[in-house]
Length: 455
Image (cartoon, rainbow, N blue to C red; front, side, top):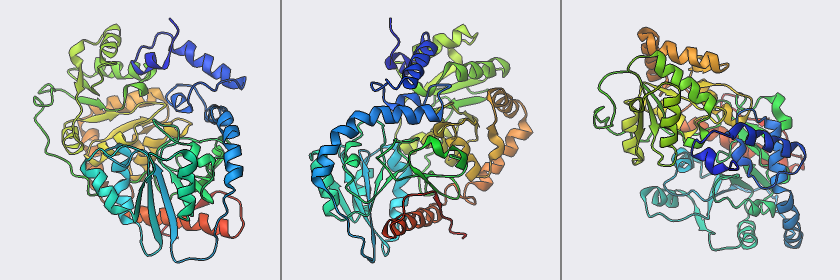
């Protein structure tokens, strides 16, 4: 049987190494246009340079196909000085979605005296509270779901958008083709996709110095727009529900609770090996995972092959966000995945007061959790390699004083460091937008920029 993405998503790992190397060989030959760049992000050993090459191969035919429409549209832009810069946020996820949970307080914190906000939504209206909150937040909430890409681009241009911010990249249901028509003079890759979109799509990528060091610039088609702390926004008003009992959450009454609520496709056999080593070395400990009917049988079998009985893996069903954050407080330590880190799940854990250990890689998605830990003053929870990651997690699980110190530091830093300070974050992001717009007005090409409210 030929290996496929479905196998990987189900945590069927037999054949995964061979499939990964086939993909890398195809990229090297310039021939891979059938696998989305998104699917490379969770494959061990794939470099940032290969991720860029895959993005550009993936979009090559699409860019060529869009050229006729782009030339016919021939958009021109008004660069006269104005009171407000018009920012357009483009997404499928303006509803109950992880991206919206991260962004909603940022949208609410924008300075309306300097910025006019447009949402361009091509996703479903789920009728839930988050959708209503977002619709009330923007100056203009525009549903473009029924519009063709060309008509959507015309609408964006007609509104005089100065900076179009894409929140999807190559994730599920994206409409990257709208960006190929260049309906705004400045286009920005932000938050939704942890990597480069490739040439001729966006001018900038919102990032931070830890996430994408200056030396990695050749691996990205976009210019770096540096936030001073973490690139990821998160407010301070997200409610954390009441913690249930361990029994109510399906956890044993005693024992250390390792936790990872990342999606199953992010779990690699190399990381799972380490998790099982920890379960073997830490008596009565359990591993608390996100419930996934497709993957949990394979994960239990993989654990058995590594000497771990099925009862040591506990699967958590989906809950509404407030209840999920309340439940999360029962975890002792979050174990990150690599090379595709926890993103929203990492900030969720830190907001709920649960420490997280990560291993630092060389690609954007493999450095996100480290970026968050740096911003909350817990850089000591970043391991340099997998063995150091095991040792760090083991020491925290077996050294009560070190574990207590980590939790106490997280509690002290939670509201005093940069990570959850959405007001300061928003001012920094706005400073970047102002620099981008001024550079365009001055006829300057995109280049690495940075902003800090402390400057």
